Length: 458
Ligand code: UDP
Ligand code: UDP
Image 1 (spheres, helix red, strand yellow):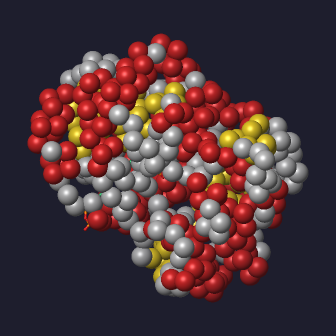
Image 2: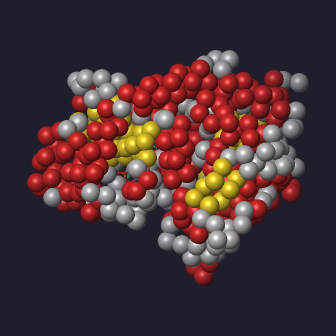
Image 3: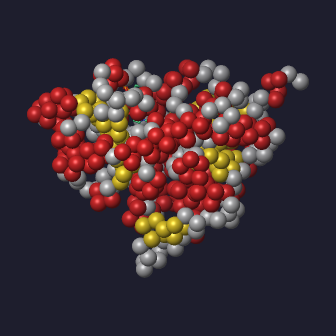
């Protein structure tokens, strides 16, 4: 038997949005470095240009990867009760997944395991009625959020007398911090959350971009049945490391940063999933200017990048733009976030608390000023404030719903940048993160263990 007969063949099935695609491709990179054969299931058409670009760059970097292209069937508009293009894509993929049955069964060598996105658990399990292989989910948020996902189907959401959801062994989460679509009847996100949360017991395991150094308590609670009996093994494989293929040839602020003193610059970015309102953009601009710090700020004016066409000057107005240019660098494009966070001149991160960004901040020891916009971000913001990786101004509420004045933004930036306690704690998390990703560290051991199990069909 040749060695290739033993090669573990894993299929990865991401859903939609860079917050899902990026961690899948970082996992892919790790599996390839361990000599796995990979099939990447790509759903067409993708929502954003950022996704198409990243998939192309990944496939050019790794021509040995087998791309299984899958054309999504159009979604019946009568069930499309959301205006979020990414949620609509989740639902469209779920409703089209039967199309994959025969091409995925025909893969050669046959698959050893399938890792599906957290939003595609039912889909992965459906495919498994013919595949009959180990099915894993990649959970793309924090372990705290996973405990909510696991427990949610059993929580009494309808109890109007309580303002909290109490999760065994974890604590209480205020209903105001839950992903807002969970509070809306029949939302697409709410349905996926409830349906798939109930089915996690059917999975062989859940991979998560988490590490004991930050969420050891929650990971232990999940893995000892204290959150809920029957949760499959939750395997922390974080922090994920950024990969070379991710870097677009984008205009980079790195040369500019090179000339600035250590920890003197604020980086502000709110991820790939939300747009900032024009009024809030102006307030953030004046806040950055009044903070007195230099800054790199990534502005997003539209949810989907293909529609984001207007120039910065038109959005900011001439006067504000002039002031901004004196102190900082404002960009309106995809940036290499990891490279910016890793630059010694960056000393603080105004962040929406998307989980990938939080873990990237931890990996680089950069304190966060959390400003949740949507989804799981408030739960993550509470977590980082509790752990001391950052601060969270609860009164700011959801970034998508409230307007925070520039003066307030500027004051909080100063507070973050001047906090010795945050800086020390962030440095501690960076040390933990570096230990986890070293050869022989917790990530390495977890991945090797997984590949061994997959090669034995478990
Ligand atoms: N990202 C980036 N450049 C950008 C915007 C985002 O590299 O201009 C990356 C970021 O580093 C992270 C991912 O895209 O890895 C976004 O995921 P996250 O979970 O932080 O937030 P989301 O975009 O899903 O809200
Ligand atoms: N983009 C990216 N990586 C790249 C190039 C572009 O993620 O290497 C993203 C970025 O968000 C940009 C958008 O794709 O704003 C549009 O890219 P482009 O200008 O190439 O236009 P399009 O692909 O939509 O024609």
